[in-house]
Image 1 (cartoon, rainbow, N blue to C red):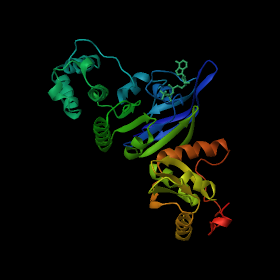
Image 2: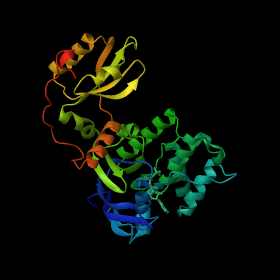
Image 3: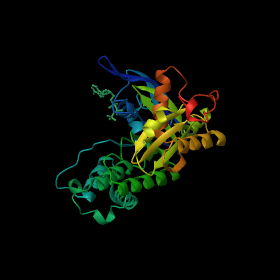
Image 4: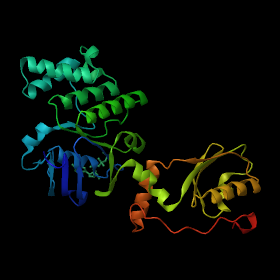
Length: 338
Ligand code: ATP
C-alpha cells in the first residue's frame, strides 16, 4: 500500500498571468478526512481538478494511492470518486435511471450493476425516491445523488468540492454523517469548503490555502489552541443595558480588544488568561460602571484561527506563533487604564 492516499508535490497552475496554484505540496493519510479551506478564488477547485485528473498542472505532480494522476489518469480515476461543486442533470430521468446510466458508463453489467446501484441508493437513503425525477430534487437530495454517483465504482478516495454549499442545516448534518461513515469504512475524503465551522467538526486535518499557496496544515484542535499558546483568551460579555457600551469601555482599557459587537455586549480578546488578570478585568468593568450580567470564556473558533494565520503571514510571522512573552499586568484602577 502506498504511504499516503493523496500526495501532492509542488504543483503550479497558471491561467495567463494568474498563478491560481502556486507551489502546493501536501499529503493526506489513508482513511482520513481532510478539509480544504480557503476564500473564493484561493485555488481549491483548481487543485482538486488536477487531483481528479481533469486538468494538468503547469509543473509538479500528484498521486492518488501512489498512482501518478498526470501519467496514469485512467488508473487513478478508478481510485477517485469526484463530486464537483456543480454537476449537470438530465430532464425526464429518474434517480434510478440516473445512477443506472452512470453505472453502465463505468462498465458494470447485469447483477453486479443492480447490486452497486442498490448499495449506493441504500447508503445515500435514496431507495424510496428511485422513481423521482432527478432534476426535480431538493439541493440536499441532489447532493446525495451526486455522492451516490461518485461512489458507484467504490473509490478509495473521494474528492468533494464544496458539497455542503447551499444545504439546509438538516441536510448538512446528514452529509457530515455520511462522510464520517465513509471514513470509518477506510475511505479517504478530501473536501473543500469556505465554511470553517462545519469542516472542523468532521475533519481529521485542515489544509488552508491562500492565493494559491498552502498556509497551514494541521488538526482543528491544534488550530483552536494555537492562540492559547500566546495566553490570549476570548470572553463573551453581556450587559443589562447599553447606557455605557462595551466598545467605549474597551477603548479605555489596555490589553483588551473588541472582536465582535453583539446584541447588548460583545466578544472581547484578553491578552492575558491568568485567573488574577481575568478577575482584574471583571473588577475594572464593574468599577467603570459597565452593567455586566454575563462574563464567560469562549472557545476560540476556526475562523479566528484562519484570520490569525493570514494576519501573521502578512506580518511575516509564523502561521501559529510560539508562546509569546507575557504582556504587562492589567491596571487595577480607571486612572491608570489609558
Ligand atoms: P471558489 O471557492 O470561488 O470556487 P477556489 O478556491 O475554488 O474558489 P479556483 O476556482 O481554484 O478557486 O480559482 C483560483 C483562481 O483561478 C481564481 O482567480 C479563478 O478566477 C482562476 N481560474 C480558475 N479557473 C480558471 C480558468 N479556467 N481560466 C482562467 N482563470 C481561472
